[in-house]
Amino acid sequence: MQEALRKMEEAARQRIVKAADSAELKEIKVQYLGKKGEITRILRGMGQLDPKERPVVGNIANQVKENLVQALRDREEILKDEARQAEYTRESLDVTLPGVPLRQGHPHPITLVMEEVKGIFMGMGFRVEDGPELETDYYNFAALNIPRDHPARDMQDSFYLTEDLLLRTHTSPVQARVMEKMVPELPIRVIVPGKVYRRDDDATHSFMFHQVEGLAVDQKISLSDLKGTLLSFARQMFGPGQKIRLRPSYFPFTEPSAEVDISCVMCKGRGCRVCGSTGWLEILGAGMVHPRVFRMSGYDPEAVTGFAFGMGVERVAMLKYGIDDLRMFYVNDLRMLRQFR
Image (cartoon, rainbow, N blue to C red):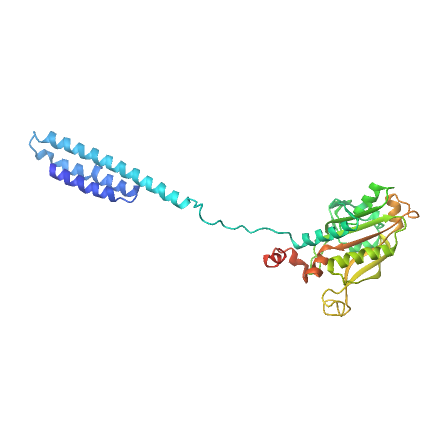
């Protein structure tokens, strides 16, 4: 029986050393040390032994139990250490490896054009002003000579929040706000870049887009000053050979008013599919500030004159970069945006 216990211990130790995980160790413990385990099975034969031999076999059995319990504990600690080491290996950072490069962001093409427009006009002495995107009906329309019953309101499908508050449909309200703030100071030379909102959505329109408004007020400002300013802008934006033309038009807050065209950037004015074979592309609207706008803002139209203009930044960007669908600016297609790094 003593020999059986020693052989059983040796077999158990070999299994313990080879155990791969805690679950296998548990199985070994149940097999050898459980109530129905190998040691219990061997000790059941002690009744056949000489009474003098029983204490010796009992001591050996207890020693074998203690040895196996300790062996199980030792193996459990080894398995835990191995698991921790494997985890450290998986999670360790090799500082000698080259880093993973992060993609560097860059300005959106609309931002690039907006900054370029601002830089051009600031170089001509204009300063940048800002105004609220949530505008009152008075500043968005009435202060610009567009009363409630004026048909020009139908051209600007507006997002009204209340009867008197709306998302501004153009940056022109800042004209009135600036003149009210500065009256009677002269001269005024400001540009107003910002977002505007209208209920449009197609290849050439968006419900949200960007405009740059310009305003100059002083004594003896003329239409030729307006044309010279816009010609200088066009040549700095699109190239020194650019030409512009002014076509009579109508805006409630300017008189006279004009649509401003530039020579086609695709065909250099020779005529092509893009410009409809005319050689010209419309770029903005402009005109001399209407006397009623002056009066409502606190200036005497008999003493001062001025001009105003407004351009869509997306329109300028489409012409500058040859983009034929305005929606491309807003769908976040990286294939298109990465061209402007």
